[in-house]
Length: 555
Image 1 (cartoon, rainbow, N blue to C red):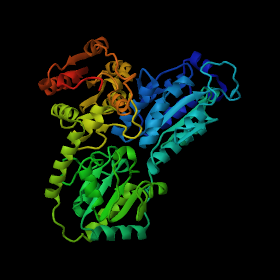
Image 2 (image 1 turned 180 degrees about the horizontal axis):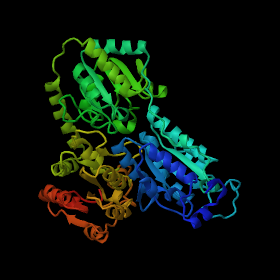
Image 3 (image 1 turned 120 degrees about the horizontal axis):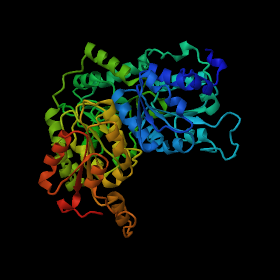
Image 4 (image 1 turned 90 degrees about the horizontal axis):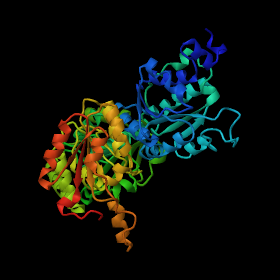
């Protein structure tokens, strides 16, 4: 049968596969290694769902498109591939835009695919289903780019362009809108266009700049490495670089565990703490890898090194952002770090004293500083951490238990094991991101630790975890509402308004969704109850009311 001469409806009637634009787009994604998609089937996107079984692609149906976007992000962090979200037109796409904003802010790879109004109906304002003034414009205002295509070949090329960005540029979200008439029509994409483009060599900085950087690092007496999200996939080469330089490694939260936080040279992700900033600013050579070092990571702290600043980044625009570089190494961070390791192996730095004993003192001071921010939440985090298996992935949210506690207490060996959005700081991220991570890494324990306010943003995703048959533990730390904003109001002399919230029966709620609810009744039981929940199959929800620690809820 010649698909160019047959309508979709006729093909359905004939009981044959439909070789349309939907199949073409999903085929090229599959060829790039994507085997899981997140989203919600809708009236207009069904031709994107039709080929999934044929292609061996697993659909994860969230209960809100925002959850689909965050689930895709959690999946992507484990796989090293972009997350893929399928939305329907109009409201489905707009529901996903918070996740798009998160991916943009945190530099995460995400592809959102949606149908759009048929060609010729743009801006028609005729009352059609899911009619939206300008979906592409709306998404384009938030994503790295948004493209409305006009053929299957253009749609496939957009996928290739997305992978070009993710592989060689700063990974950020993209949106591809396929008009309904294009999506449901026979594909014009030739077979060769559906193949994944092979990876080519990645850019390395200019030789003169590399030589300058190598010279500075060889001569430095107190070098420091700062690793951001752009350093998270360098692997063992980054650890080798730190060891050759005898350099402490500090990370942002997006770069957490780029070097194992159990390594004697690691100062973990406590970049915001005064004792760690003192080490950075007292250095005579600071190597910053793949981070803009924004205020959201520093909490008012200032990075102003006394010595030379060397920055590695894939974008020229980042080199003078927030902290100006003296030497800019433009290119792929993994390729450049490998080049530095080779050079320092051939000509090692002069012998330096092992800084480990000094770093032990820095770590001791940093621990005290972190604990002082919120003693109760820090202590609670220590109790939760004691229950975690060694290789656990921990999901967080924009909750006090995350940024006042778990972020500093956790010491992880592998990057992308702490799911968080330190800059965009949205609520509702932790649970769906943890679901996506568990789908991607079914053999690793996944534990989501978040506040009650954040969990209520995404509580409907409990059923997604149950439906997917996941072993997932959720620890809900209940401070009675929006504790951070409550304190912000009090600090401004505002009597708390809209922040002390009614709580559900969390144990009964978990049971109603098909999971198992647990409650912690005394402070001494936290570790035992959390460990029991982790060991149990299925969805397990642990409710930890802060009032049992003599911490008033609602504050």
